[in-house]
Length: 297
Image 1 (cartoon, rainbow, N blue to C red):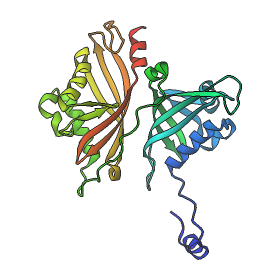
Image 2 (image 1 turned 30 degrees about the vertical axis):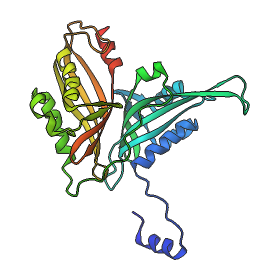
Image 3 (image 1 turned 180 degrees about the vertical axis):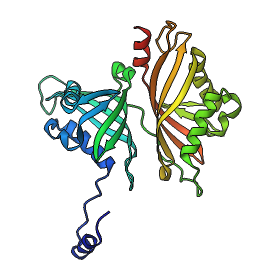
Image 4 (image 1 turned 90 degrees about the vertical axis):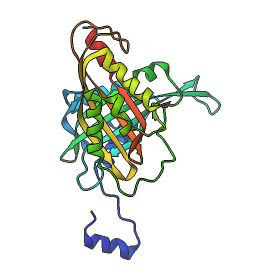
């Protein structure tokens, strides 16, 4: 918050005060450093040591990891298309759906040179300590990286206004996940989903079909348990984001993985939009690469 004396000074001069530097601003500064390849300035936004996908890295090691993907003189950029959290007096973590875009020029660079681009999505949960990034969970959509689509699935638009009396989104989500873990989706899932159905990663499902999609993973992975690691909410936009951690033992071929009798642990980063207190849209990335890797060890 701008101090009173400074607020009065800005009012007298007519100058707009600078925006408050919250965690969302810090996260976007981090993305800007990557796009500009300003590796020497990452220390402004990232701690000397950072936990990345559960691995403790020095800032140098973390920077080298980023450089592998965002090498100098490559036309690869990263930008946030959805952000939840990181605002307000408590700041907190930032959950972001990111678009990684690669521009390919065919032949020497000239105004008439043919260009094409492809994109893939990644979902990142970023945590802060003392105003700097201290922990990152990052999942990429590897199927998109391989298929190289021209555009990722966009977030929903033309949202209806939120209800006058908002529900407790955190409690709503806790109850939703409890419904899945309880095995009573067939009876209770409709309480959490928009009656006309749910759009999941760009595909429209009826509530029954949406439940069947979730049930297919429960059938393939015995004892599959959904554990909420992090949930970030935006009441004003009726939106929430969650990092879920899964455990269970695969018993059927699923998502390209062949059961080997051993349990697995993997995760999902997922964004939800609600209409009138019910889930209407979902954008999800599950770390199937890690799932398959554990089954091949």
